[in-house]
Image (cartoon, rainbow over all chains, first blue to last red; front, side, top):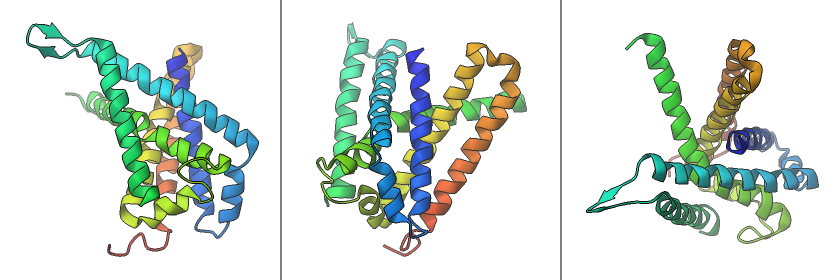
Length: 103
Length: 124
């Protein structure tokens, strides 16, 4: 059930961010940035990140459980799918940061 | 395949794609704009990550659209079906209508506001 409720945080973060994006073109960028610095919003974002990662990690594990990969005589375990996908998540996250923020 | 079953298959397919996006792209966006920026953490100390992302016109805009629209679809779709599983099954139709309304308006809004960003429609 925790997994199902994590979608609530995914949806609410998306709606808050759409509101923030709506303030950018109208020249109210400072209001948008002030909103993201609000302590209540920061606390919500921390909780949303934890739930989003929980949602992702449980999904990675389920992939390994539902669709194990056969390699010769051995079959992959769910924790192996979890590990591979966590590494993939870290690579994608760093690529996003490098391409869109650091460059 | 009947039309309704085909539509359900398409909606669940989009939901799965949204789940993929929410799993791989949403965590880094939440971290950048919601935690690293207000707390002054790496890699956005001092800067505003949304402006930095939008400055990479096409790829930045595409990243924001795919991440926000996909996550919104996935989150609302799953939350609406969770509510029906929690005993709100009699209101299933109404919940679906509200859910799809929020998804449609949200996706159109994110596309509209991103297109208003100067330089988005210019050539690279």
